[in-house]
Image (tube, rainbow, N blue to C red; front, side, top):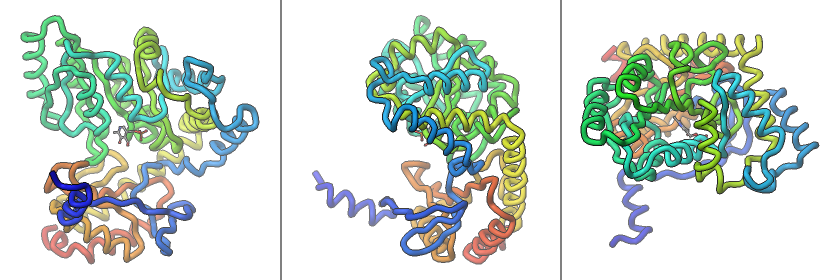
Length: 394
Ligand SMILES: Cc1ncc(COP(=O)(O)O)c(C=O)c1O
């Protein structure tokens, strides 16, 4: 058996090694890393809320009142008023009966899926679903069937199979709404029709859609008019909401079940009340006039950057979200490209296996409401210079 040192060397040899980079300061989209200032095109803080004064003020007020830690798990004595206010705010925002928050989106996925299905049940999940959803499916012990990304025919054939071979099982379909590494949208209307036809439960992870799509940024399901048909609307407060923590919004009976059975909720200390207060301020911000304005600016930037990227490569697809992946393929080539961009002053990480399939490495470019046209021009000018082949292809 190879030693861990040998395994690390093997990762390096295959351009798959990862390491942490220490960012010593952040100011808007400027970050300072390794003694250099870089323009950040990799954050999920799509609306710039992580530095929004209203959120910081809410957090400060909660610190004054409750201190910095919750002191215990939610069911012991860690449920403080900011947690309840946040859950009510989230439920109202998502227009569901109730909501439950977790320490992270990852914990929300693990807790909810494991609480709902077990070894006598069946999960049908999109191949490109986020690692936390895949982990949740595996850990639940349920029979897991994977369908190719957004492939409705295969989803239906799995549902048919489950109905025939596991007639007494609970069926749970799992999908994202906006895919985190591809930035594309799931066909939620059709998925909802299938889940109804086969009487399955549906969990939709709106991590990258909330704040970006739908009225007040409620997400893709809202935009498509199917939100009320989704049993578990999952999300995270770590992306466009600018804070951290995950949630599940849905029917009261489901939320009550999660309070009783979701292990990552029950056996974990409640998130600091200051984070709950900041997240409530973030949700409130989304519905405000300023929130509308910020989302409008984000979409102006998305359309601008995709146009610039299409000038480099005419095949660049129409953007469906703030995630604009620049496909490279080879892991080493993606890493070299990311390094060259960093040398030129841009932080755009190379995404490699196992986050994406082998040979599908890419630069994951994200754009936010605070990027300026000059910044987007500068990025695309450098990218065009570093990718001459794509220029010819275009
Ligand atoms: C689609 C998706 N779901 C869930 C998560 C996990 O959320 P969190 O970062 O809050 O754990 C992420 C982000 O990492 C994500 O991209």
